[in-house]
Amino acid sequence: MADWTPSSSTSTGALCDVRSVRHYVEAPPGEKRFKPNFDLFHARSSDCPAHDQVKSLAYRCRDAGFAIVIVTGKEARWEALTSAWLAREGIDYDALVTRRSNDYRPDHVIKAEIALELRATYNLRLAVDDRQDIIAVWHAARVPTVQVTQAGDLLPLKAPDGGVADARIEAELLPLEER
Image (cartoon, rainbow, N blue to C red; front, top):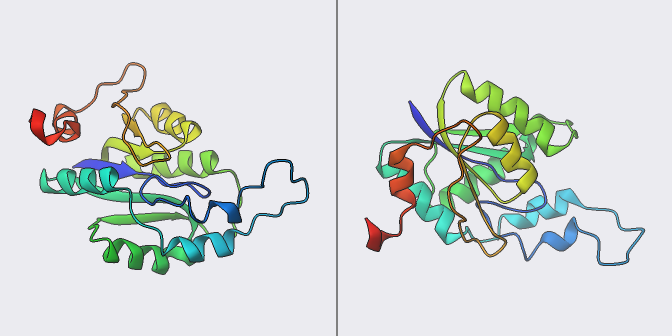
């Protein structure tokens, strides 16, 4: 089975535009006593819009027959909120994979483990993320990637060293006027 795998992160968002709530988890410049509030960040992120280009890519990949697996750095306790947000945004998916409860290891460690677990079930074809350290995780798992900018724009597809991108995925990444 071919698979498109977006990967959101804890303090930024590949699928969701969290610029309006990022202040809950990112210290203001020069602030030394800042304590991130991930509970408030995640709770308020349910009001954030999806990045249009990522959402459109998910629709196109779904229509092309790819499975959609959502990978998030959020703890399992946020799964219902995330599922409700995905439903409200009209994003169909085959699986939602979260970090286990009370697992506060860095995102790149969690997502490397998730990538290995997913490879046992799926033929991973694409990962989408906004953070370069997570893009590196997917490349280490030999999965082609697309990076999302803060504004929600998609950067060009990058295959991992020695890897090849699926031509059908490449076609879905072309603007409509180029297809």
